[in-house]
Length: 351
Length: 240
Image 1: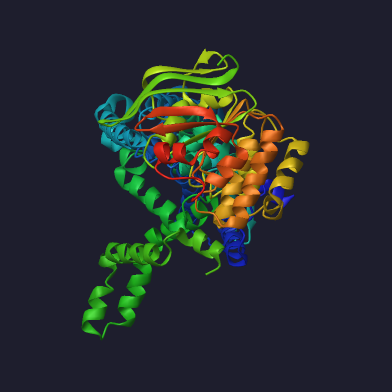
Image 2: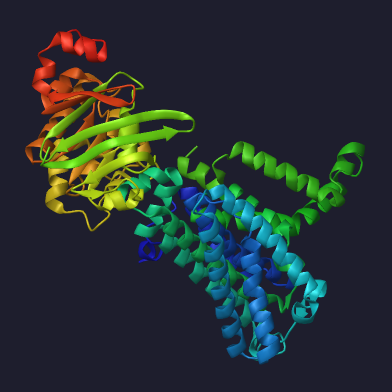
C-alpha cells in the first residue's frame, strides 16, 4: 500500500527513511508538537516549498532543463488566487477559480516559452526564462492598479480558513480554529501534489525524461520526440509550481512581488534542489525542510551560541546573529562539498 | 540493387566546415548483413548518423523501403523501424536494465517471447535485470545496447562497432547474438573493425575511404583477397 502510494520509489536508505518519516510526522503534527504562530508559519512554508522544489526538480533533476522562471509560475498561482478573491469575492469558489486559472496560465506560458526555446537548445530555455521572469516581475510591479504593485494585494479568504472561525474548543492546548484547517489544507494538498510528482517521475513518461536528460540523441534514436517531452515536462512543472503558489496565497492571505516573484526565491529553490539531491524527489523534502528551518531558526541558534561565547572576543563576534547569512552561506558550501550528489544521493550511496 | 531496404545515393554530409561524406552510394539488401568497413575517420559512423538524421545530409537521397528519409527527423526514422546501436555503449546509465529495455520498445509493451530470446542471447541481462545500467561492466553495457535494438522487430539495424574494446569472450557472445539476429532474417548495416567478426557475419561488404564508398561486393570475395584488402584498407584480414 505504502509502496504503491510512493509509486514504487522507495527511499532506499534506512537513515533517509527515518528522516522522511520524522519530517512527515513533524509536519503532520506541527500544530500540536510546535505550538505558536511562527512555528506554524515555518511548517506551512516547508510544505509549500517541498512541492515547489519537487516541481523544479522535475525540470532540473529529471529532464536536465535549467529554468529561472519557476518563481514566475509560483507567482502566477498566487496572484491567481489573490485576484480571484478580490474580484469574485470571498469564498471557496474564488479560490478554486484562481487556482485553476493560475495553473492553466502557467502551463500555457510554459508551453509558449518551451516551444520557442526548447526546439533549439536547452540553454536558450534558461536564457529566455530569465528574460521573461524579469519582464513579468517588472510588469507586476508596474501594473499597480491590478496587482497592487510593490505593495502587493491583501484579500479575504473564506472565513472557515481564518483564525476567527472557531469550530471547537481546544485539543492539547491548541485552538481548533480556521487557521488549523488552513494549515491542514496546505499540508494535505502539498502531500497530494508531492505524491503526484512521485507518480509522474516513476511513470514511463518520467523514464523518458531521464533518458533525455542523459542523452537526447539516444532518446530520439529510439523514437521519442524530445521537444514534446521537454515541453510537456515544462508545462507540468509550471502548473504544479502555480498550484504551490495558490496554496501559499491561501495560507498568507497576501501576495506581493517579494514573497512570490523575487529572484531571491529562485535562488533558494535552486539551492534546496542541490542540497537535497537533484533527480530525487525526496531531495526536495530534505532540501526544503533544512533550508526553511535554517532560514527561520539559524539566527536564533546563533544568538544562543553568541551568548554562550560572550567572553571569547573573535568567536562571539563571528557568531553574532547579524551574521547569519554568512553562516548560511558557509553551511551551503560545506553541504555541496561533502554531499556533491545532495544529501539524498549521499544517503542512498550508503557512504 | 532492386531489393534494397536502404539505399543511399550521392549523400554528402558536412560537420562544421569539414566535408565528411562526399557522395556516398550504398545499398543494404533486405535480409542480409552488409559490413561497412574502412580505416578510422573515413566516415563510417557519420554515414550511420546521417541515416539516423543526427547529421543532416547536405545533398543526396536516403531511401528506406523506397521513401526518402534524408530530411526526416530522427524519431520519425526510428519509428519507421530503424534500430540504431551507437558506438561506445549507448545506454541510459541512470536507468535499470529493465527500464532501458522498456524504453526501447517504444511502440508498445515488451513481448515476453522476444525478451526470452534476448535473455537467451545475453544471459547477463536477466541476472542484472533490476540493476542500474551504469553499474554494468563494459561488455554488459554493450550487450544491453544491442539488446535494446532487438527489443522490437525492426526493418533495419544500424550497428556501430559492437565489439570495440571488448574482451574476446564477450566478443564471441556478441557475435553469437548478431548471428542469431541474422538467422531471423534481419537486415543489418554493421560497422566493424574486428575482421574475424566481419568475415563471419557479413554477406556483403562496402569499403569506405575519404567519405566515399570505394568498393562493394561479396564479403567472401574481400575476405579471400589479401591484396584487395591491402589496397582498400591498408591492411590484410589475414594478418589482423
